[in-house]
Amino acid sequence: MEEAKGAVVKHVLLAKFKDGVSPEKMEELIKGYANLVNLIEPMKAFHWGEDVSIENLHQGYTHIFESTFESKEAVAEYISHPAHVEFATIFLGSLDKVLVIDYKPTSVSL
Image (tube, rainbow, N blue to C red):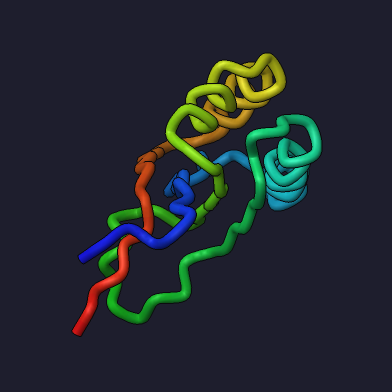
């Protein structure tokens, strides 16, 4: 197994919003998260989605957010960036559950 050439780092956040968070507030928060890619240079891409699995193994997590960075150092720069710190305070306060994993995509040779 080997890391993909030009290995990027994926920053994945699984979330469950608090019961009292309205759909409009969720949309506002998701747009705010997506806008970080315009404010924080090391953040190269952002994608998100809602759980659609039929396996029922989500453990309560309902949303996934994935950001792409060029290195672990770029993730560290993102985490400490004032725009991220400000947004994270608001965003995390709206969540009931959160799980974050950073990884380097790795391919498998068969």
